[in-house]
Image 1 (cartoon, rainbow, N blue to C red):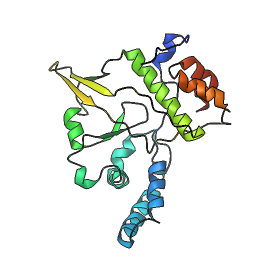
Image 2 (image 1 turned 135 degrees about the vertical axis):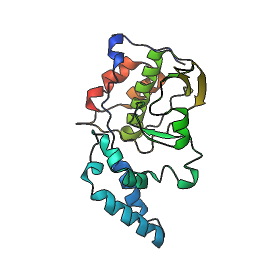
Image 3 (image 1 turned 90 degrees about the horizontal axis):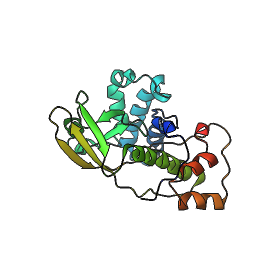
Image 4 (image 1 turned 30 degrees about the vertical axis):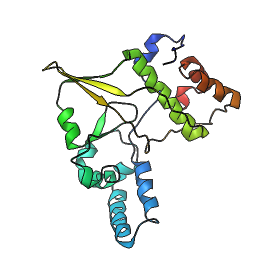
Length: 222
């Protein structure tokens, strides 16, 4: 890993600098796009599903009250079917989270066995201190912004191995993590800051220079 260069007060790293929220907008858009690429039978199923979804305003806006996820579980199951095919439902160890958090809002049965909702666990990233894990998360958020808003693709080459410790049994389990940001959207709140080719090159050359990222792309703009 590159050395981390920052003069920012370490207290600032206690909180993720970007505001993240749960939204099904990109998932709904995916289903809408599927209407023109599916056979007649599948198209009819998609239409029925979209009609149900559009009748529930809470699912078409940013979600802050997570209790609606239980209230409309059947409709959300329809939405999430594209990510969790029924044939794989009992085989996948998968979960969906609010972006850049451990707030799991949708889980497969196997995931629940490993990390039950009411369980007492600690999750750590193997080989990294807590502060470095946090910085990895911030840099990954910046790389998502770079990819979606500036059309510059880059990947942070940092292994995603999680150690999950059961507090009651004191036993550790290790899992290779794979993160899919397909339905995550970066949004700029106002005018998108301009980045020159030289600035982008500098960001990618010294990707852990968090000071430079924050100066060129202030988190409060996203």
